View 1 (cartoon, protein in one colour):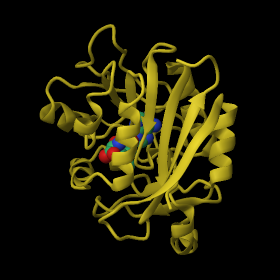
View 2 (cartoon, helix red, strand yellow):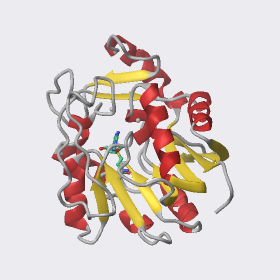
View 3 (cartoon, protein in one colour):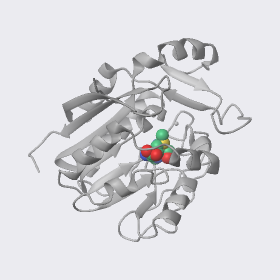
View 4 (cartoon, helix red, strand yellow):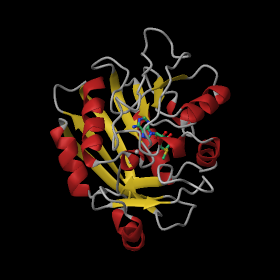
Length: 270
Ligand SMILES: C[S@@+](CC[C@H](N)C(=O)[O-])C[C@H]1O[C@@H](n2cnc3c(N)ncnc32)[C@H](O)[C@@H]1O
């Protein structure tokens, strides 16, 4: 069986992306005053660490991800990879028609991305304020449960609205997220660690990579229910067209299954 899913940081300054190509996008400057607590800065410290960025690169593409890449390759782009990280899937996505653009709010994975692929079109930006014009892309990917690290749920809805804004009418958004059922036990354990202000479904824990995370550095995620994520996507203007579960094939962990959902933006087909 196969299925699909979606993922936040401490208030701190994101610097302007000086390397961003002019005209393609603008960098963002998000200060503590503009990025309120509970905004999209959740998990930023975790993702911006060199250890985290390198760790993700050791994760082989899963069977489900390969299927997503094939699926995207058959549709008209260009493709925006939201939360592109250090480019783990770059080689499998770069040949999408119209080209590939990556966006991530963390500088460190982007630095590694550019080091690995000098000609890659990647920019620093927040999924909640994408630095792109309206209707610029045919396809968007929020892969590897990135949507679930965006907290609270109102921010996830904003990220979906932003994806809808930058997609052309009829364009596709593909989401992959954790299988909530696999997290049931973990969820109970982490309930003890839940902080005031967390929503039901939020998991807070020490990050896997930072050795002694402070309260702001601990990794947080929200394993979304299918119902909620679909509702949020519908509110943003998307219709669900496809959904499948897939094995991560290789890494046998509690998250050994993930869910993938493909949404089409309402409107005239591409
Ligand atoms: C789970 S990692 C996946 C990275 C990459 N897509 C991969 O498959 O290896 C999630 C990525 O999303 C990025 N991210 C999380 N929240 C974000 C936000 N609000 N805006 C932009 N990027 C974000 C993180 O910096 C991180 O690189």
